[in-house]
Image (tube, rainbow, N blue to C red; front, side, top):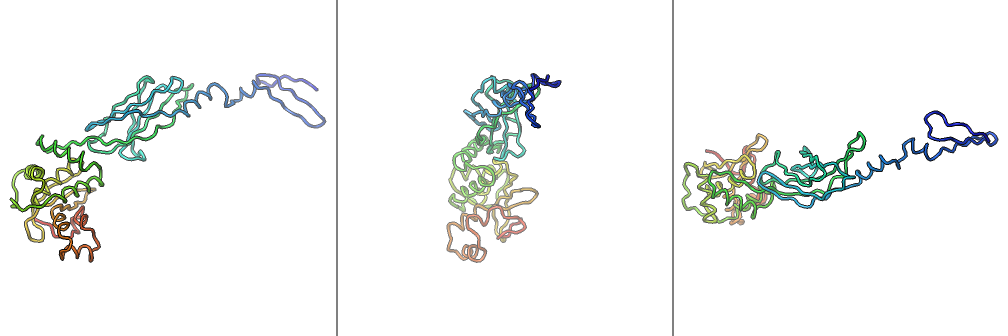
Length: 307
């Protein structure tokens, strides 16, 4: 047996045993550590951060902001935090807020936040280990819908529109738009005052529709228009003619295309499902009465809409 000094860079001696023609190497524990074992203090610190998972403790909403609070992690796991949020659960095009102190466990999200919109939020910690920034796991996702904020120019009407959205519609996006349409379409239809309106009738008509809990075609269109606008849609109430008769409806522009929504005629169809036209729509067109006049491309509607 012969002892040799370890080659340059080794932390200890390596014993070389010669048994016949076989040579066995037995590196020391110190040498193994020097070569980057997973048990080094640096790697252990990184693993501790990477395994950590912050927990959101509270999330509150306003019309155009979201406040997030989370449970504090120990200083060995966090130098600070990142909060990300998006209007979709996959966090596509998410915005990120950096919290630079480990002792701060609250963030107010404002950039790009819109009223009456569903947002998804996550938090993770970060820590500097040597020259490398290490991140923890993202927290479980929390969702929240910002408060509604109507802007009709009439404060009393704004409050009522916000209440309808918060308590009756509840949903946002296209699902919420359909719920708002259904809400208006199910209100009673009355022909009183059904003459072509003038002035800011989209405001006065909506106020009458709410006060009377029902109304004519113009008032029905006015209310749905205000709900759609408060939800962020490019909507306008239109007074014109449908198949040659005076009528009111709503037009909404999405991705450059105008769509027609007719809550009042939907009210009539739902009230008279056995009428000739209702049967034609269901049996010949294969359409549902509650949605056949919702978001129809203006170039391809069941009825003829024009001025």
